[in-house]
Length: 352
Image 1 (cartoon, one colour):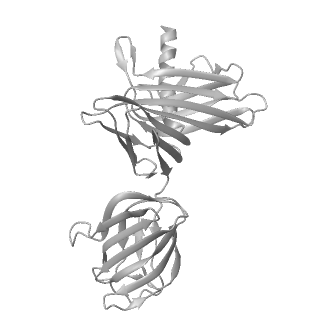
Image 2 (cartoon, rainbow, N blue to C red):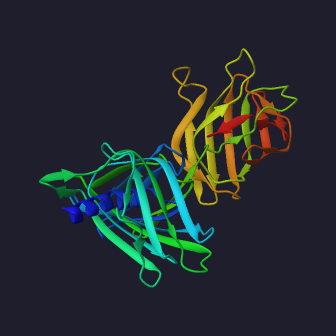
Image 3 (cartoon, helix red, strand yellow):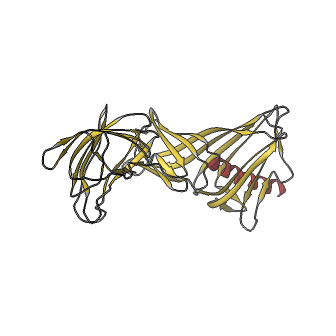
């Protein structure tokens, strides 16, 4: 009975490890039948969901596989990492975790049932062999005739003694989550990032690769308001913008003159491969100050051409080029509603 209890605690702990120590993550949908993968959004605020979708053979069982490596600093011969309020789903999972450059390892998880915290192993740290230790488990498992899984918010701490003279400790974790395609072959999975450390996921299906970045606040491209906003008039703006950080955008907001209905009626954004955003205003209803479109990623350092047609009295940045929150924007040409052309009228907008 004691051996069974220890194994149970270990399963809980490794489950949390596999879901939390995510500083650099590689995710691959492990099936030759998977033909498509999408992620939304590609930049996510910590705690929000990332939606994964793809295509496989109808009713096929697919394991979404992940593996990642992290490096923990060593201080006074010890290493540790703590993560708070990790929110993770239930479901069939398989995990393995390997520590390198260690003498031993121990983890603590809580709350678990009526316990505030459970440490594994129960009788002390797990000793490594030649500086390496590996544990592999499957969840859910059966205990005393009952199927046991885990879900909800948990805290986890991993700690131990590093190998002699080691300056860092490596952790390698493999994780697989089972997903079943529907009768049309569609795959869907929502991944919550609550408690997940800031960093990047590289998501892959065959030759398809995507990157999702977990951030504390979502970056935006915001021109703000200039000191001299007038004169202003609607018309057609053409120019370029260059973000200084990678952005995932799905809305355009237009600043407007007080007491007016300034807005954007049409927006087009393109790169050297073609048009990536093409959206139209839907009139004075609902969220009419914004234009919404399918999420796209603007890559840091790349230049994009924009064409924005405005209506009523939107605000203007009267500069040829402006350094703004999130990057740089330049006016190539603005033609107002009367047909007059300017080269220093930038639309005051937010892309977010």
